[in-house]
Amino acid sequence: MMMVLNRNHVLSTLTGHTVGFVKGEPVFVPKVAIREAVAIGATPADGSDVDILEDKKESYEPFDLSERAGLIMEAILLLVERNDREDFTAAGAPRADAISKEVGFRVQAKEFAPVWQRYHDELAEAGN
Image (cartoon, rainbow, N blue to C red; front, side):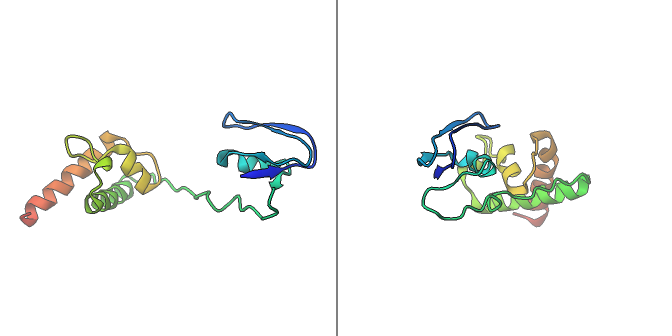
């Protein structure tokens, strides 16, 4: 996004980006740095408003193991239904990062392995 600032300033962001502002001149600001640019007073060069809260998701990470397992099972069902090969390993198991993306919190393979096994057990009981 092209942004302007009303003074000369060098913005060094927490993500490692550096943006040099020259008073009144539009400069490209990477998407990950927009929030910090707005915080120092930068505005979009086209005069539009920027909503810095729109892409910030409120994350909720449950601590209850049964609740986590339920959310992981829902994610597995969604991944199986979607059937995108990028979501699965060569062995056919879901990738931890794909499950994490769906549930909104970090999940490790050792945490979803029992849920994956339960999924297969339930399929076998159903006769599929």
